[in-house]
Image (tube, rainbow, N blue to C red; front, top):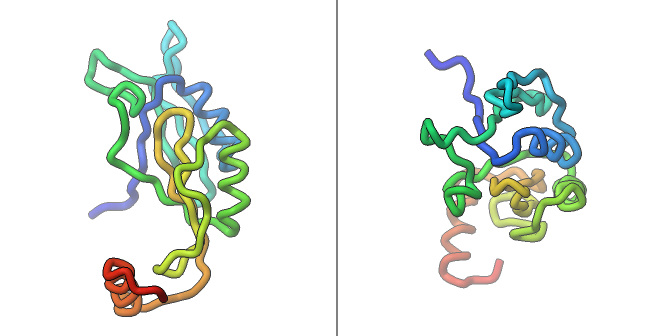
Length: 148
């Protein structure tokens, strides 16, 4: 039985990332485990109802950040009260807009920010509640180039 699922991010400077996630998303640090040389082996951040785990790179163990790998295949979705405000705060803290906020076919207003450490954050808030069937209908129309 699964009890929880945690995102665990590897970054090239965990100390700076902890500061960024605090400024950008209001995350607070629970604790960190630091090696004598200063490398953060493990830290946990409180993102309200969830915990984000983070560490520095450990190339000797094959643990590398998106910057070292040249990108990431993972997006983290934050469902918030006001996507525009959170995106603006994330950019002010040092992130880069990848897709500006807009109303989406699936009932959210959202956009995408790339953090300074290479991780992709999809940030949105609900603007309407849709059935899966209606989302599929709108998705089909979008793919066919039909204006809604």
